[in-house]
Structure formats: structure tokens, C-alpha cells
Image (cartoon, rainbow, N blue to C red; front, side):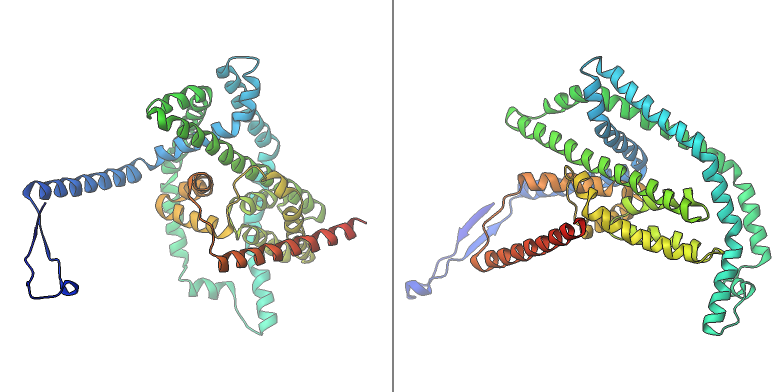
Amino acid sequence: MAESTAPVDQGSTSSDTIDIREVRLQPQNIWRVGWVVIALLAITLMLNFVIDDGGSVIFTVLMGWFASIAMEPAVKRLANHMRRGFATIIVLLAVAVFFVIFFVVFGRLFIDQIAQLIAALPGLVDSALKWVNETFNQTYSSQQILEQLNITPEKVSGYAQQFAGGIFGIVTSVIGGVFGLFTFGLFAFYLSADGPRFRLWLASLFTPRLQGVFINVWDVTASKTGGYVAARVVLATLNGASTAIVFLIIGMPGWLALGIWTGLVAQFVPTIGTYIAIILPVLVGLLSPNPWIGVIALAWGIMYQQVENLTFEPRISAKAVDVHPAVAFGSVLLGAALFGVAGAVLAIPVTAMLLTLLGIYRKRYALIPSLAAEQNALGRAHNDFSEEDNKKNDKSDA
């Protein structure tokens, strides 16, 4: 660039002096700006192509990496007595055997209960309509509702024909799912078996000054993200198992299926997962021959959530990143909008990883006095609230 200063009237005072600068873009600078813009556009198009066409591959690799992180404690312990590759194979086989035994023992029962719920659906709808008509003095019928929804026998027949014609697509999807599961296991094996060497190889791509930073980022990310995933799995197992047992005792229809549903949704859907998870069992219980089952299911859901929040959930999640519910919910919405179901599944672990890195490397400043006083007041209020809860817990224990 070239700069020139325009002359100023000599009769003006020093305070009135105006420094006028004229900036001229040289041809070579214009070309540089153009190449930068073209490079940015090319990178944007390439990322869009990778996200659209390679999203499934990226998802499989990320899931394999998260699985390798979750297996790391067991693999690391076994690797002290054998080669790391054999240790990884043993852990993967143990996980596979567990799922096979689970599906052999509970799979048939689970499928039967799903079929029972589907078969009982018309009766549940009739019971709901009867309750609505008696409560609000209406005369709704299932036929009227179908007509309002424009669902005719011809359309139902057409849907059935489409479903029959889509059997080949279903078979293809199942084969694709099996192949995807095999690919996922392969990535999980290699990323776990060769994890230490892969970590050092990636570090070698950075300058010596940045290698320590990279290793720190890798280790903290693996620790916190793996802790978060493991905590969710443990909490979902506890929630689902205890809920299924309670549902079995009270005679809930489809107790196993609804217990598994409650555990998975309550733990893996942020913020509102607990409320979504309990709605289905409550509705099934209320519309069953014994409506009090739904009331007990609602009471159990509320009680379990309180016990979980005050007792074992903080201990299990102590090593994981504390993701604020609003941040978790927003990350799931963003992940679902960008990558669909895969993005929703990976949203919270990725957010946990980013929050960990932000907590390590962000630069924080001291608050101004007025904000510092506000922070101290909030801290005192939180401590007072915690002390009251502890006193209540001590009294209840006594």
C-alpha cells in the first residue's frame, strides 16, 4: 500500500491541524486479498462436502474413539500383564459377550412386551377417549378422530403396500447396520490398541514448543470425555435396572421395555430427558386396568430423580465435565441440526471436551469490585442453601 499526506493550511493553529491520509491499494495487494477469499471459499466448500457426504464415516470414527476412551481403564490395567493388542481384544470380546447374553436372556421378553404394547394400543386409545368423553362431556370416537386426521382405509392399505414394498430396503438397512457395527468395532480396536503410538505420532506433527500442549490437551480430553460417557452409561444402567424392578413389582405392562426406555432417555437426553422418560410409563399405567400403577410410576420417577441428584450422581460424575443443562440442551439441538441423530448423540461429549479445553487455556481476569461483591453474595447464598440441605439430610438419617 502507498500512503500520502495532504498539506494543511499554514494559517490554521496547531489544534486545528488535520492529518489527512490517502491509502492506495497496490495491484499485488489486491491479488493477495483475492487469493485469500478464494482459499476461504474452497475450504468452506470442502468442509461442506465432508459434512454432507462423509458424515457417517466421521460419526463412526468419533464413536470408535469415544469407545476406545471408555475402554482405556480396563485395557491399561490388562496391558500391564500382556500385549496391548491382546488386552484390547479381551475387553472388546467381554463387551460383546455381555450384550449377547443380555439379548439372549432379555431379548425375547423385550420383543414380546413391545408386541403386547402395540397390541394393547387400540384399547389404550379407547380408554383415553372414554375418559375424555366422561370428563368433558364429549362424544368423541376413534372413527371421528381418524376422519379428522384424514386417515382412510384406502390410505392405510397404501401404507401397508409401501411397507411391503420396502422390505428389501429394510433388509439392506440391516446389512448396512451390521457393516457399520463391524466398522465401528474395527476403529475402536485400532484406536485403543495403537492409542499410545497414535498419540505420539500426532504429537510429532507439531513443533517442539507445542508438543507438550498437544499431549496435555489429548490426556485431559480423554480423561474428562471418557469420564462423562462412562458416567452416563453407569447412571443409565442404574436407572433402567431399578425402574424395571419397580415396574415389575407393581405389575406395569411391558415393565422391561419401559424400564430400559426410562433409563436411556433420562440419562442421554439433557435437561428434559427425565420428564420425557416418565411420561410413557405413566400413560401406560393410567390407561391400564389398574390406573394406580400410573400414579406409582409418577411418584417413583420423581423420587428416584431426587435421590439420584443428592446421592450417587455427583459421585459418579465427579471426574466428568459438569455441563450446564442449558448448554447441554443447546448443544444437542445444534448437533441434531448439523448432523442429525449422530450429532445429537455426540453433542454432549464433544461439548464436554470443548469446555474442558476452555477451562484449561482460557485467560481469566479479576472481576471489578461491584461484580466481585455480587459473586461473593451468590457464593454465600449457595453455601447457606447447601448447609440447610445437609441439616435436613442429617435429621432424616437420624
